[in-house]
Image 1 (cartoon, rainbow, N blue to C red):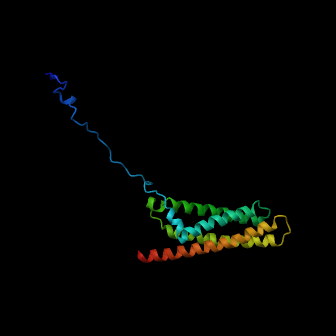
Image 2 (cartoon, rainbow, N blue to C red):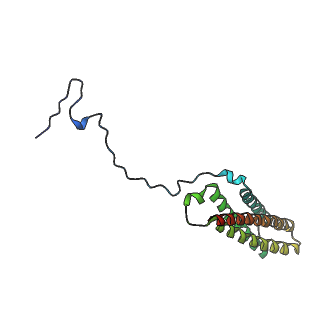
Image 3 (tube, rainbow, N blue to C red):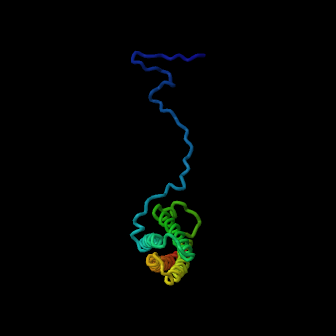
Length: 180
């Protein structure tokens, strides 16, 4: 049996498949939230003391790299290795805080303890590096002696900045471990 469609004078029909009032149904799958959907800029972090310390570490690291490059002694090779490695790690931590990646990933990582260990290791390495740099260049009479000694002195200041960063991370880690 065939159904007949009757078209009226106003152009409408009685066929339900052509009913303009009938809304088509669309089957949708549930949307899985992206693990990085919570990423947002967190610029106010860099107005806090730990954020300012990270920025100081990055700036002093750049100054140390500028003053010590190119490396003419084995001590300066070690010095630049420490400076560049800590610079890259500090930049990564800056991006983690800037983009709120800690909060977005929701991984079972103790971020504060991880950062505190990272910063404390670089504090010790920075101390060894500036001692090596200043020891090597204080005995030399070279064209680039003054800028390499300046690199060692800026590294002393950056060692202090990494020490301060380690201290504030330790305080934060102790306060967060007492609340859990």
